[in-house]
Length: 109
Length: 114
Image 1 (cartoon, helix red, strand yellow):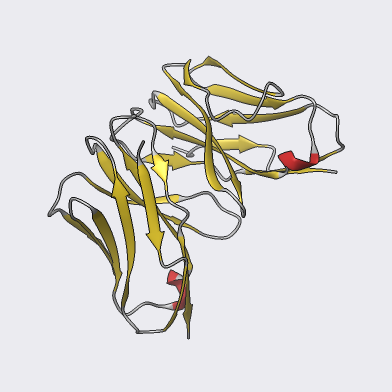
Image 2 (cartoon, each protein chain N blue to C red; image 1 turned 30 degrees about the horizontal axis):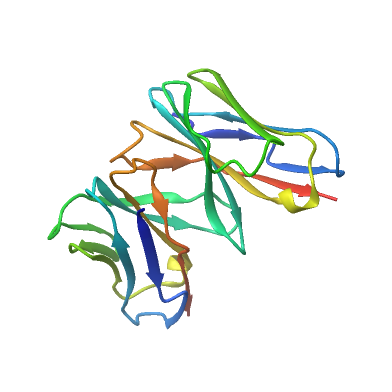
C-alpha cells in the first residue's frame, strides 16, 4: 500500500525566511510524485510532477526535489501570498494517487 | 478550457434527503476522480472512473453513496439518504490518464447536512 507522510503539519514563516516542506513516501514502482497548492475554499491546484530521483522543478519561489524516499518543496524568500496548504501525492503500482495530509504554511508580512 | 466544473458550489439539506453533486471534467481527460475532504480525515478518494467505467469504488463509505459517469463529459455523485456525518467538501478531479499524470481539481461542493 502506498503511503505519504508530510511534515511539518503547520509552518509559520516571516516574509523572506526560506524553508522546506517534506514529503516522505513509500510506493511500489513510482509513476509520479505531485505537489499541489490549496487555498482556503478552493480545490487543490497542481504545481509540479517529479518522476525520478534527482529530478528538480522550479516555479517562481518554489523548487521541488525528489529522492528515492522523499521529496522537498523549497520555498525561497516567501511572500504572504505563498500562504496555503501544500499537498503531496504519489502515483505508483496501485494506480490510485495517494495524498498526504498536507502542510499548512502561513507567511507573515 | 474552463477547467473542471462542479455544481452546486454549496448545498444545505436536511438529514434523509437525496443529494446529487455534478461534475464536468476537462475535455480529453480519460480519468475522473471523486474525493471528500474533511478536517479530520483530509482528502479521501471515493471512486474513480477510467474511460467512463468505474474502476475502484472501495473508498465509497457505504451503499448510500453511488456515482455514475454516463458519458465522457459528465459525472454525478449521489447520496441517498444523506446524514449529518456526510457534511464535507466534495471535489471532482480529472486527469489525462489514471496514473502518472497530474490531476486537475474542480472548485468543490460544500455539503452541509442538518
